[in-house]
Image (cartoon, rainbow, N blue to C red; front, side):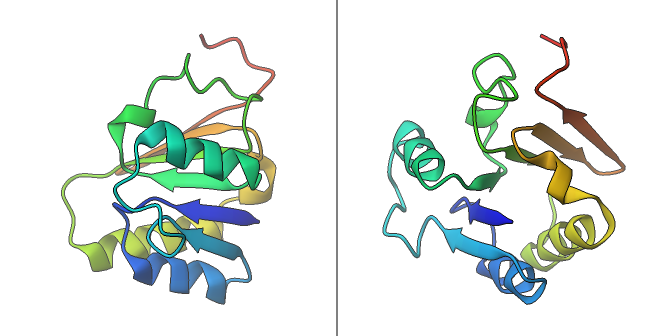
Length: 123
């Protein structure tokens, strides 16, 4: 899977995902750190990457409708150390069928994953 990690995620998550065979770019590595969200989003979609973030500016399901992008995963974990965030991301990508998440809007809570697929009418 082609993935871009937002600047609010630990770089160790990129290392873990690469170890699982994913093609991972990060916002800081691409020189986009501090750029406005629309610019980061545009770069992500131009590259057809699945975007992973904790930024609530990406939480509007209507603005990021499934099927209108390459995929978006919003992490809504309780305040956690960066190590735990990396472990959670790795666990998700080891145990879930993430290959089916292309074009989806995915919200990960502490003990729950909600997947909004392009064909659903949840909005």
